[in-house]
Image 1: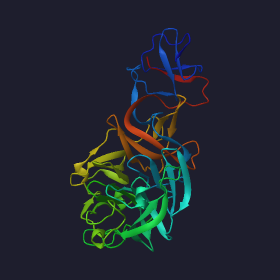
Image 2: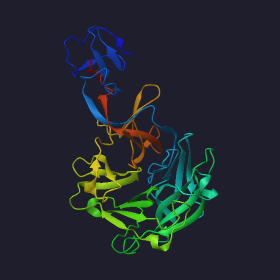
Image 3: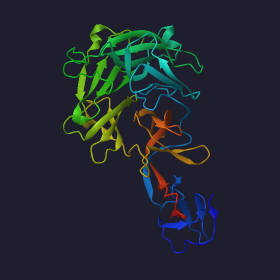
Length: 401
């Protein structure tokens, strides 16, 4: 509730900035005018409809906000189970360590070695949901197993699958035992770490999404910028095997992609593709716009189309709180707001609530050496401005009503 204090606001117009001795985040003066302190925020555009509001990426207090870290200062390859219960991410920008968050219980573990495999550098992690009749090793984990993409033995790009810890405990959803692995190849049978692609570098961005209904695997690779490399989306049809339906098995015929799309085509206004995730109907590609804006946006591409960049639409809003250099505005349970910054920009689709698409990201919080999972949505409005110089004797306030 705004506190009412006298003086200083007479005749001020809404959105006008004036200076006062600090009177808290929000106060009402003797004339009934409401003032918001610089550095404070409100998302209550109903009460303050005439105040200037900025479009933001926003995490509401009702969204999932992890209390424990996952990964180091630069994790990537974030994967969320389709039921929103578990999350996997690589531990760092290179190596085979990974982290896990049980979203249901809000418990995380970190720096776990890739089980049963050595010499495998992780690029992307995620879950495979099976819709068919499955063995106990899959059914005890709610019909999921994991798949990681990385490069192995000097550069061979492979998908590597593991069974999971099952049950309902906090360990549920973590990698358990190595099951199978397979090469990733193009439509002509060429390995993706050689020939036309050469996607065998730790700096390569990678991601994958599984469509369990149509049994299609979507794999994305992208170099660090459009100007210095390329990006391709590969689709693998797995209908001829048990993979992702009733087991882990992948036959030789399914190593080859059945469709390839060049996402760094010359007419695409993209500086860098960061991440890909998906729902039952769409892929979501996180990308950075070209200079001079370099805004981080999310492109939505239907699975039913030709998967080209042109077949999709860019969602309204950018992944950034425009009042600061940070990435999202986060509402805390006590009614305050914080800004969280995401270095990895590994933003992954999670769910849709009341027609609002929700994403999960890895963000720096109070401890900038590590990151936590935070759910957020785009295209929200917030009122407020960045903090003024702390050395000023007076504080800037914006009239909002």
